[in-house]
Length: 151
Image (spheres, rainbow, N blue to C red):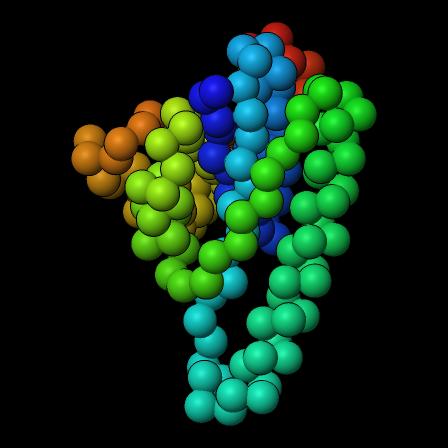
């Protein structure tokens, strides 16, 4: 089964990317893998603090995921998979692509502010020619209606 990989984070553009991945998966008989990345922090020398922060981040990620998973189950009849990795985002996305050969498309949301489309879109699109899968970039301003028509 071909899977769509989408990154779950706190950005506004993440919502459209998840919605698009679910719609495409539902229309093509695919699946959705939602990747969330816990980035390294400056508290690494305080092991107890780092462990607590990691546990809190994981709880927050799982709660956030469950909202999207319920929508996918109820509306799109898809059972998404959650993967949580730790490290630098681009490295972890590339590692997930390498670890799961069923992933056929990476779906990213693009922001619309003056600073650009976002760090993941910027960094990964620079290396798009060497990625093992195509990237679909979903604009943050794309309406639900237009997205459904495209998907």
